[in-house]
Image (tube, rainbow, N blue to C red):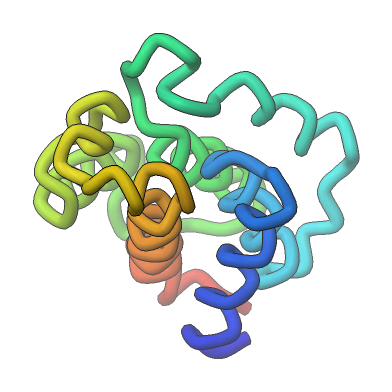
Length: 137
């Protein structure tokens, strides 16, 4: 998959009603051909809108979950520090890891049509790919 295809895939999942975490898991499943179970996707369903409390962004949670899955069969250059690296990189890219704060920065139209969340989720997928790029088979 190219980055353009990845961006489009995420956009499609979000338009279908998936949340940011689900979109990350489903896109990663296709990208790495993980063949994840339906139960794995189901685990992401409560991570919408910062676990409905406005806390941790679902896209960030998604890239950490996928990293845990990838870590079973691949290695990465960050080792046990990978979640911290992903979190820090996410904050550098987006300004916060808190869904509520990220959504406050978005205009009303971006919030309503999920465009802001789409952009954040697309950036998150790129952060994930970059972290695992050397480990891709």
